[in-house]
Image (tube, rainbow, N blue to C red):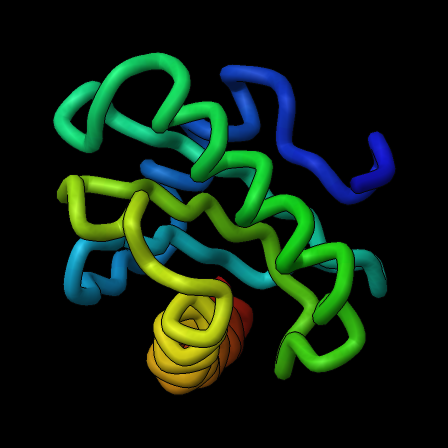
Length: 130
């Protein structure tokens, strides 16, 4: 995965946790927020709950490979952090991983669409008031 498509700095992760929307899935948690450019940026976090360092690193490599292959199919340009929270996530096949990530992006797309509409309304109200 290219450097421009990765979230690497802790400030990026913190901003996503603070300002983004949260989606819970089976074995995964996804934080996302709209991004102004056309690139999709992604970060992967694997907690110690899912296994040893070997297991965690393998999971992160598989997620990066998955996103490199399917980046064009991501429904919205956004920053996203995928957090593996349960050991079952490390044992998923590539097909299962694809299903989970698609489900996560669909839920994220719905929530971000609502979030964007709310922000536009709030900006309009604040402009009228000020």
